[in-house]
Picture 1: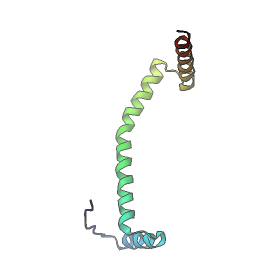
Picture 2 (picture 1 turned 180 degrees about the horizontal axis):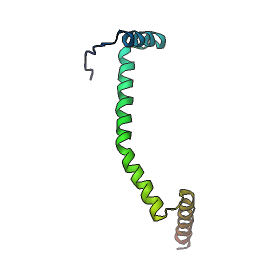
Picture 3 (picture 1 turned 180 degrees about the vertical axis):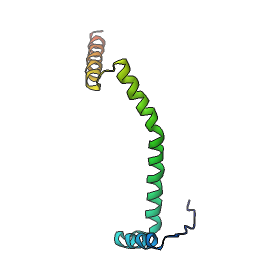
Picture 4 (picture 1 turned 30 degrees about the horizontal axis):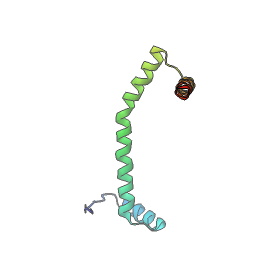
Length: 89
């Protein structure tokens, strides 16, 4: 579904830069604006997650977490053992 919105540019230079960039890319200015808005929204979502990630990292350091490479090796060994046991039955 296509929706319309009017964007008013109070900065004439910004509007001109947008139109020049759109012409350079051979794309409609609306595509460039839509992409910029998507990226802006995603960056805000990422910013909201940052405290959660930082808290998890702090907890990992405080409780003595293990590096992923070590965990991965242990998982591979456990899977191999289960597969051998299943094959022996």
